[in-house]
Image (cartoon, rainbow, N blue to C red; front, side, top):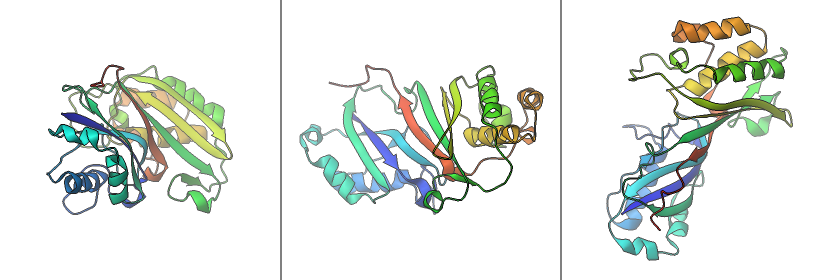
Length: 252
């Protein structure tokens, strides 16, 4: 039987989602706790990969477990969260149809990036601290965000040496807003390339401070070369906030 986990985690202490040989990851931490509680080696497959320091308000993963008795464990969710460290929370666990895949069945993913406009000691590991006197113009940011929906090829915003079959991504929504002196960037797409959101944010900030023009920004898409885009924004300001699936994934 296939089960979905709905997961939330603070990524500052982890070297990303995916299992690594020498560094601790979110995936490995959850697998170890599941394997211990279910007394069987459990491997989970995530809906995507987040880099070192990136957070998730909502992540999904699936795993196989062929004993139906897990459905009777009313306190299993409580036990699992008790064994996990405080920076990971399992929000929900539920059975899904056999062919439903945490990664490939997803329709879209939503990311949020946060920039603290000024020094804020309470958001050191959850935002990019903008300490420059140079003002970021919100209207320029949103002009750039609108342009994102017009283009499909995001090879200029992908980390170098990534061999994807295609660099085509469909961006459905992209917008900036400001609240309580924090800049928020929200973006929804069907898929993302490695480092894509952070390089988009870094490039849009260059647009927002007047370092590049709208024409320069558009030309970056045509260049299809990461060297033409701006810096990558720090990982600590990035959150995976929502993953959308079809409505009929549930087993019951």
